[in-house]
Image 1 (tube, rainbow, N blue to C red):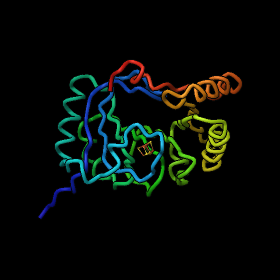
Image 2: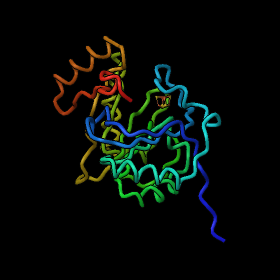
Image 3: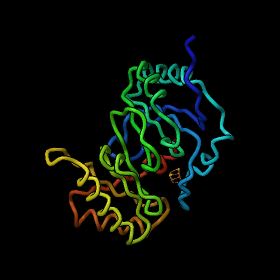
Image 4: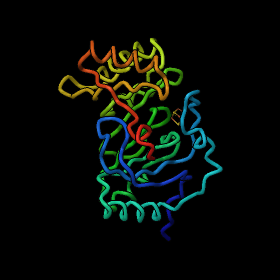
Length: 212
Ligand code: SF4
């Protein structure tokens, strides 16, 4: 007898614009999974940390929502969190593929790798560095900047991402994102990008606009 894939804890789903990274400004359907043990002090989604307080949602329900979002104009679906890699993502990816949207992942790269994605946004954290698989696979590397040591960490992560690829493989797009409401992070990130043109600035445009 066929059995359904296990449900996943979901904090929220919504159709908005991607606010950050290379795909900023594009129509996107978000699935925010519950559960994160990375513990960033400045995290803006701390409500997502305990997985058990969020409803377990069947994957087919999420597929139906993704299909509706695609019909309403979403260009891709973003699996975010929390830390999505704290769940085994293969069944979710397989189910969502039927909705016809490219799948994007937003992750800190902590945890065992799973799932198949067309775009991987890796936001590594100095206190819990990412695994090699995340560094090898990511399409963009997005480092949050609060203090000078974050810039050295960003360069170390960019080098580590290149080391894990073949000589003909392109490296990830390199992005510095000032911490929200952090003037020092803004100053550092802007000055660094000015002097290092292979990096670019990423802003949390959805927060500036006051949208999700
Ligand atoms: S990894 Fe993301 S969700 Fe988890 S604590 Fe850090 S910023 Fe928050």
